[in-house]
Image (spheres, rainbow, N blue to C red):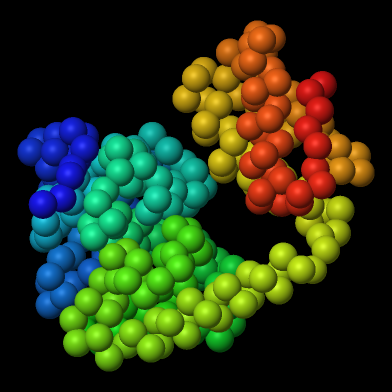
Length: 276
Ligand code: FES
């Protein structure tokens, strides 16, 4: 028996934004009835802002909860903001999902990505490797190489079993397991190569901005604070703490350590953080 968070149970029992939007501006689909679950996501826009979102899903309680929370997460966001949402964000917002049910959060993300692709064209997949043209790897569940690659990248998946939990690929006849393992190996080989290559100053600045914006800032915002990246001098990252973080004199060291440890881990182990 799996453990579900209160929030998963709440969204399963009282799903928000169920239904269809007539004259929706964007529609995204993921999964298929033949594979056991499917999701259709409708978005209504005002300019580039999502003003309404509804969903229709056929699937288990986790699929309902993931779809429901996703609509709440994206209503009020711009398309650029929605584009940054990952399946991990959906699962985190639900207070977590059992590993075996993570594929429901992936399905939510895929439906969102499918809708946004119609707005952005193929740009949304620009960082995928050239060799991963969208070919089907798992014919039992209709899962493509790009979907597996994306799930590995976002969720740091290391084993075939984890990939199955997140995408369903490999969960029936098992014929595709060897290919999934090859994709995992190729992904980490490419990642290790990237790590070995030193970053240029511009690449470093871009990477620091991205990590601060996507990983550090959302954490500080939970406590009413925030952080701004000011400059990079050598290996010194200059940042400004704002909101509640500004007054946290006693915990400045803790915040500095927190920010520094993430930047060291994600960008460069030689980075140091200085508040300005
Ligand atoms: S081809 Fe993937 S489980 Fe059958």
